[in-house]
Each structure stands twice: as C-alpha cells, then as structure tokens.
Length: 222
Image 1 (cartoon, helix red, strand yellow):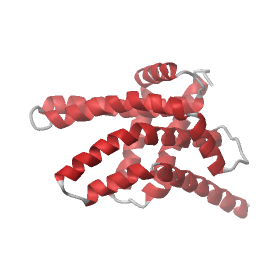
Image 2 (tube, rainbow, N blue to C red):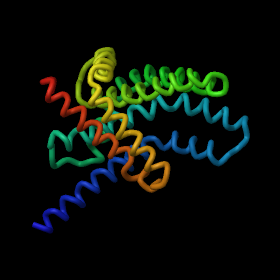
Image 3 (tube, rainbow, N blue to C red):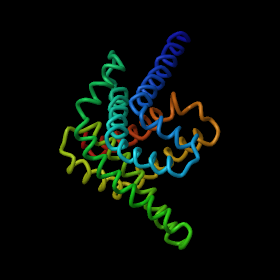
Image 4 (cartoon, rainbow, N blue to C red):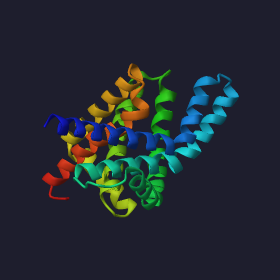
C-alpha cells in the first residue's frame, strides 16, 4: 500500500515536471529574450527586446500554454497510459492556429491594459487602480480562454465569447482562478524561484482547469 502511494506520488510529480519543462522549452525564445532584458541595461537593447517579445508572444506563448492546459486536461478526465511528450506535441500542433488567433486578441488587450497602467501610474492613482482591476479580470479571462481552447473543439469566436460569459458570470470560478494564479506566481517569483522551471505553469494549469472542469460538469456543459 505504501509502495503504491509512493509510486503515485512519483508519477504525478513526473507529470507536472515533464509538462512544465516542455512548456518552458517551447517558450525558449521568449525565455531567452526575457533573460536578455534582465541582464542588459541599455535602453536601446531593452526597447528592441520588447519589440521582439511582442512579436513572439502570440506565436509561441499562447500555443505552448494551450498545449499545457490540454495535457493536464487528460489527467483530470482520467485518460491514462499515454506519452507526455507525444501528447503535448500533438496538442501543440492540433491547436496551433486557434491558439495564435486567440493569442493575438488577448495580447492586444494586455498591451492596452498594461500601457494604461504604465501611463497613469505617475499621473492618476485612481485610474491606475481601475486598470489594475481590469488586469485582474483579464488574467481570469485569459486562463478561461486557455481552458476552453483545451476542452472544446469550437471556433475561436465561440471560445472567446464563452470565456467572457464564464468570467463575468461565475464569480466563484473567477475568484478561484485569480487566487490560485496570484498565489503560485507570488510564491514562485517571491521566494521559491526553483518552482518556475518544473512546477509553476503545470500546477497553475492543473488547479485552474480542475476548477473550470468542475464548473462545466455542474452546468452540464461537459
């Protein structure tokens, strides 16, 4: 019995670690640009890095993240006995076009919100807080889009609408997603940075998709 429990613990730890490492590897160009931005202080290089980052994110980050959500979905609906690497690659390829389309929409919204926060941070405190609240809602909405893309084979327009209504209409799910995201990001960046390469992304995807899936079951929209 103890050996069975130990085996399951090792198996689940491996699932999270392998999937998270795959997510990091598929985001390698973005990771390298971010490291360069941290290491290099020249303004000119930083501006160039930001431009490169803005080009890469819709094409790389969103497909890789949707593939990660699709991978953890398999565990939650209890589909066993599959190769993690092959499945991740299959999800990446199959969902690539839809992920990029949704990525351009979401990334455009993020640019607007982050730009407003940056602009008003030195001139208008109240508006800064308002846009921070918008950023929180956008974070929830983005994760709901990831979950819907991983779970449904529908058009991007349908996915975006459904994620919006789910974000605004189910506050229990929204609070769970926001709280989980802020906790994992805060712990990972604030002290346990070693979690980032191995667990942060896959753990966040697992918990938020679990909450999303339970909501779908309750709404009989499985």
